[in-house]
Image (tube, rainbow, N blue to C red; front, side):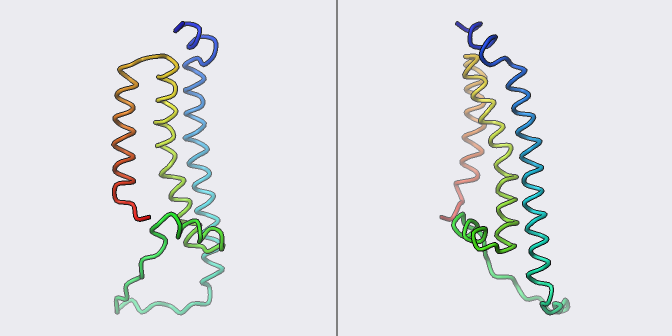
Length: 133
């Protein structure tokens, strides 16, 4: 049964290509989203006053939750779009680990399934453990 699943349906090379494309297009997509947000930022704040650099004025916390980020994207706010690009960039390696897990499940390699599940759970805990909702 292992030969049927790994040789005809999903060969190792196909999964490696899929993961390679995922990483490549994930980074390019995130970069384009951040670039778009940066261009919108330049247009939205082009007439704002030049800050006084000898006096520190802190920036209020904004776009730190998923609802704030998605709300900023919906309203075409530049900072929200840039933060969404950062989220896409963070999601790219997580999806890579997930697709590796799927590949190991198809191959029925129990040791690598366990290792990949541990890595994925540590990453998810570190991301969502301190998340404000």
